Image 1 (cartoon, helix red, strand yellow):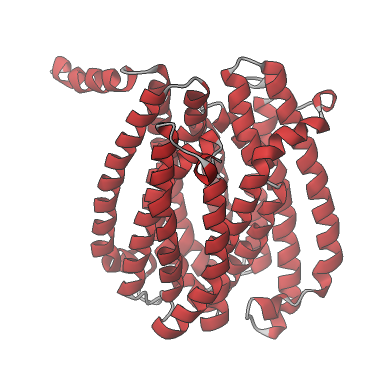
Image 2: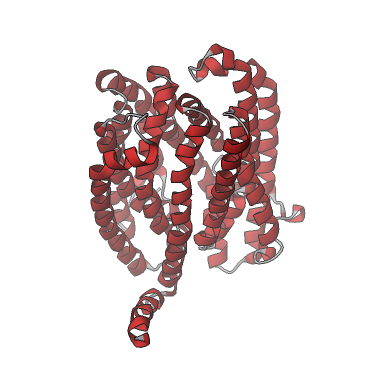
Length: 456
């Protein structure tokens, strides 16, 4: 009996430990990510109905829209986060610890300066912003929303710098460890919201504090621990700050910066468009559908996350066979994921009734369009991981800028003519350009036939 039980364990262990060291490390991280992010998915699903019951669908929609607007400010890292990810991975691949520490220290210093300027500016202009009008909320909520915006922005700024620890750990090909921070932040948020439901009546201010402070505390404690233990060698230090190295980070980072801006416009404007055209209450069903299908996105990202820095290392070491084999495996994984997404569409109405009840009505067409969007976005993700890892992002940047310029007017047009799911449909159609051109670029680069914009 014991022998029969141990055979599957031995088989799985052999499956994980077989292959290239880089692949073994990726498989270990994927297993860890499945466990950790599986917990995060479960928590996020519990958190949605709990939060809606604490406030109400309209207030929840206001919260989601405001959070989306504040998230726009993430582009103020000017691409330094992603620049650090590549440059740190390259330094580690070359065994240059000193250079790795310079990159980390310089990035922390620059982002701390940027975030300080952002905070001062926001403190000055926030009292004059009509948040009730922007969010299409009742005028009598004006003062409450001004306070809420300040709370959300302050905690966002703190996360802005503190989350660099996740970039460092992920760049060192340990994304499973980095994902623990999000899990703990979500877990503590769930606990705090549950306590609020038992001790207070629905309050957006309390909600903002609860969902803002928990990830900040987790990231602060994690940074302190890792930089005094496992990552002590790379701990940021003022004497290692070299602003002349900002050019190295910016040479690639500036491209990521513009891609981030385009992506924010491309992906983060949906809540605002829906709030303006259909009212903040309709943001809630949209986000429920997005949250439901984000299970697929999260599962796919579990596989993708370890690959960015792994592709960087393989590219530096000219390991083309490993790159080609990995891309083939990802294509197979995408097919499996597409089938799973189709099953989610079929089950969607039943799941929504069990999950959030009958109060919120969700059209089947919205689920169908979201599923198509997720499938196309997953296909693009396969190739963007490789292109980001090797720093060939000029074409991706061009497509992102064009797409972001077209997305808002196209989304408004389709929404007015087809309904709320037209917003998702617009993003889906525009995403097709990357789905066509990204695989072509990857093939050219791997076969050393890329030239012009294909090679940049």
